Image (cartoon, helix red, strand yellow):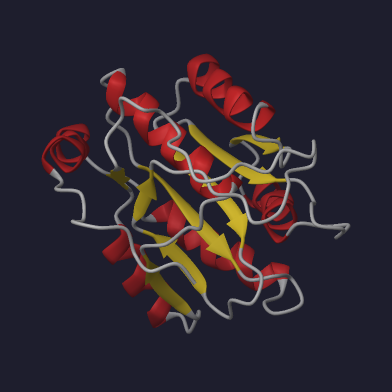
Length: 210
């Protein structure tokens, strides 16, 4: 199985990003995975992600990011068709509320087996929770762009986004152990994924922003 895992580089004045630290650990545990570290740049990151999907043609896609202030591993259920940057990206762009793609649905669901991942991590004493709000920054942007691209091109693979706590709040080795379990749980039949994407009803409204 060809697995593509993405993470982000540092931003906001920090020297490290918990997602790229975890990805480095995953590469050691899974030397055959394909990986990309994306810059926190609203133009370059989605372009590089879609390019990687086209080139690698993965059987599963796992996107990682960090969530400052969270004490839990957050399994993101929903990608939202909206940008609203509270801080600039590394190129200085700070978008006011706007859609990511005007003709696209208001939201798209993760196609990872989140319930299975959640139960597995919980059984191993990892702090884990479902989340329907990945923010409206780069994490949500690439999550939505990936799901929209896969749907538009009829590519039915397990794909989704997981937020990690900062490294100071959850050690990288524990994050890597949790993600290794998530990878082991991320096999789904393509028809099941297709049904998830085709027939999932978007929530009636966006969640209240934190």
